[in-house]
Image (tube, rainbow, N blue to C red; front, side, top):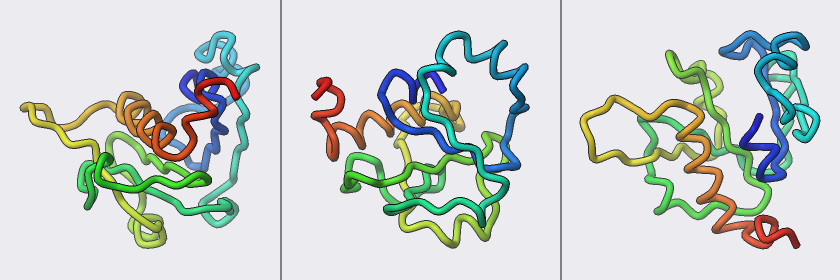
Length: 133
């Protein structure tokens, strides 16, 4: 939520999400970022209807983020840290990308991977938004 508020990018939460999502939890954990984030909640994957391509971020992604051509209007999709996205969701995305790692860790946490990927996508497809234009 903080990342979306700070970048001006909308946040879609598709149930069931991987964390408790309630108004109380939102107020406690989001601090003052909730009021600045454009949040849309969806009951399930079938009720989510993105306008552009859906690009899944995954540790088993086929293409490193810097070799992928992000386009304005792409939707970045992230799953649960523990299990990713369900197979039927994975099968329906337009592309799957990864943040390459050279170290010994299994993976980055989902927030860090989201931030790295979002800024790369914005750099490629929508850099003027980050400059405040």
